[in-house]
Image: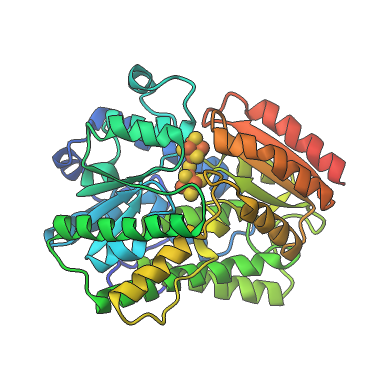
Length: 442
Ligand code: BJ8
């Protein structure tokens, strides 16, 4: 059991199936379809149990994330309602390019809304082509099916012009929710930075309108520090994974980043630092997860949102350990920090603009930075192979797989390309492919 954390109840080793508070009135007041929501909530514990609670040698600190998962639609949503009642805002996002620091500086709580499960596809396919990527269909399904209390809590949802699928889906999504779209350039030249920097001013003006507050330098500096602290904690946790044996599974490391998108920032930072302490002690003692000679893999590609644990689960149940992720639910999220030297709002927005445009998403062209990052991480984490994961029908990542595969193979690493969605229908086939890949590595 962990020490009590300021502002959060002490908790026991609870499981994801235990609920002590009746949240139904809250869900009803948010307009959820309670019957459909019950079905969703009854499915997640089984998935979590199968993927997470069957793992051996988990760090003790992961019990915090077990608890957070058990309260994903409960206590955290209650906290968001309390925050709103106290005059704050809840701002939904779908992409790494939306700066959380600016949202926080306006008294907002940023919550990631990308979803990792198939939901209400019957409704979704009335408005989107069936051959749309699972991430887009999923967020649309959670909205149309009225099962996401995060979407329904949001005062504003911020979209962005990344891939064509998202961009066009937002036009439909915006008919159902308060949506604002940022224009993200697709190149990184000087003129693109000018456009992007102006977009941050537009975003600030929009958030000022929604929150009723001005943007103050002190609040922005504090938000930059807090979000940097969160990223630094994740850097520590992930640096420990360079050790062999790895002190934490890829599944658990993935969960930490997935939860980073919606948990309370200072509390999350504190708990991740506690896990990092534990991992560093484990490494010093030579302890770890998986077999001594387990193949070490790097995964790169499309983001994986809760509860999309499918590929990690298959890989780790097949005997390998994922030690690094070049993904938005991975290193792209925590590797780079905003400088803490800015003193004026203008300087800080310049720094934020530069940090965010430096993310290497396949929506950009050219995108050599992603290749460089994959090769650098492969070397730093001493991996035995690279798995390139694309969501089916995602043109940016599936097309970029060609040049990435060439670079990875030229650098001497075995490479496996996986193209899948959120369904369980291909688990058997993926398992066979992963096992064959691991045999080849051996
Ligand atoms: S910064 S990866 S979060 S855009 S998988 S919806 S690209 S068709 S998610 Fe992403 Fe931001 Fe980039 Fe990250 Fe389109 Fe592809 Fe679907 Fe995607």
